[in-house]
Length: 493
Ligand code: SAM
Ligand code: SF4
Image (cartoon, rainbow, N blue to C red; front, side, top):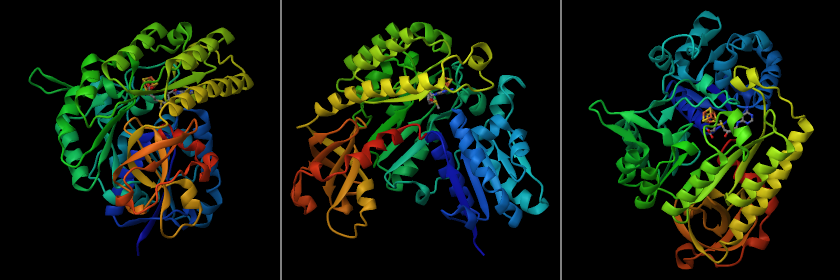
């Protein structure tokens, strides 16, 4: 009988990709996906440790499965990813009914671990080494880049795919748990990446997004004294037949080199979109965060991006309420957001992470209600800036890769005929318009007619091809239902 698998994913795109690959490999073992945890023989949680809230969610989900596991002891419950690597045995102390704890660097072993639980009935732990537990090469080997054969049916969209180009991080920002749970920075061989991109293209994929915690730090020693940088990698995969767009996230401000910016400008398939988190607009806070740049450096970097890549759209991340952030320092973040022209920013309340330098060295001294207020205030400023950026695009014709029916269309119970579709521009702007469902996966020209802070609304330019009347759809759209969509483009929390 077919065994059923349920998987829940929290966190960033790296986790979304890991889940896609885990599901693909378990399907090859005969598992079938279910969306109902109680129907599943194997229940997996692919977890995130970046903020406390993400961990609480998982412990609460595990708690609610306790009685289910008591009733059906043969069901297997697994915790994968960042929280598994961070909390290790603590997971089983808090949730003894968990059978598998598997860290980010051990995902290749998952089928074997599940089989072992089935065979022995004993819990299985697979973890990588702590960063200080051994010499770097040994720690690196314990964090294996998990890039097995792709299964096209497992991708959320046939036409878009994430491609991991590196794992880990060596920056050690003081607030961040990622270097601990994802291990040392290691770049993949450019030829392995190019092969994966060719395979994706052969399966019909048109847009690849290259992933790395600091993707622009990508460097691979080719062994003959030469190094491959991100700019070289982009050039190498650029001519892959079938690939129309190449994006990459997330960039580290200090590693934004001119040769990378020139590659973005010169290679037409590389999209003029950069996600470059600033985190704060205050030098004192940046220093405590160990971000390795000042706000002046960051502003110069923005100017350089815009000068070398005309029309580039830039987005950012900010943390509010980091240890020692005064009203004055917060005001500096407001000033940066008000003047930097970000397309959008993801704003997070500081969440102390045990195991980080920030947690060790500084006091989490900004009260929760102040963090909340600063978060709302900064978001309000960003929304105004985003609206201005969007309004400036009204009247322009933009190229959109159609992703599928909009949320509103999905909710409406639509069955046939023109439908509200959504897609993204090359600058990563979300566009909603009316069209035929067969446009999904195609690139179309859309004239922008309306805008909110989150979404552009428009009409497809080539009517004949669509068989739909060109009309202004904006007033028919439920902008509120779409408002949260932009936040889905990066951290999913
Ligand atoms: N590597 C990326 C970078 O350097 O920008 C981002 C990685 S992190 C998963 C995504 C975002 O989470 C960060 O940019 C930061 O804004 C936020 N973040 C990380 N640690 C955090 C913490 N302890 N509390 C709140 N937000 C945090
Ligand atoms: Fe975390 Fe900083 Fe590395 Fe980004 S660069 S993953 S924020 S340590």
